[in-house]
Image (tube, rainbow, N blue to C red):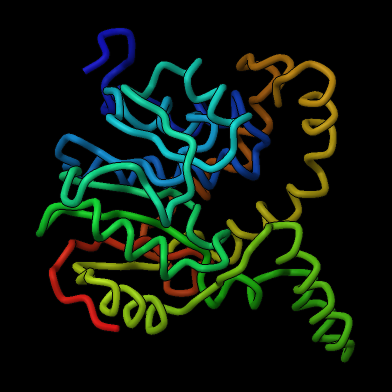
Length: 274
């Protein structure tokens, strides 16, 4: 445990995230951070797609053994975060570690961005010892359906525009996959994983906060470009209105049948099929 970090029971994940991220990303990451507190990830731990290390630095009160990402710029930030024993620049389908090196792995909102996701899932299987847990979350088949602007355009009989809006939003979200549990279960089983549990989260109401945050979050983007950080004044008084607006989404029930995202708890088996 890092003595400089508060214990998970003491941490306000919502405040920690919206103090340093645009609120629409912060609320989603806060909801996800809570989930990891319920599961034991034995070391050595593999963070697939660690990015700049921001999520790790807030979610865990200990260092993660290895963070891997293909992009150099975010990895420089991950090094500065001091949240990893080691960061590696590599693609997720060719990680430089021996078979069965890791005892657990997680990947937070990463796999949806990878075109050949099967190759990455199979490589993750190779890296884990048999029975090791692999936790990850991704947008699901309800992501595009839940977009409020698309729903509005459908209601006024402009379904073509509604579908164009969905395609636009999926593109700016850089998604290659928004798959159903059935698709993911087949993919995981083929590549040597058993699904232990899964659930949808982030209700349509919460999702609409995220959707419109992409547009209302423009000042945060300008701040990031000019000053190198998303929130220029991360103080309680400055963020009190934001916190009040999103707090109900943070505290809602974890399982939301109509949620736009799905969390998967899986474990490695040795049953890989071609």
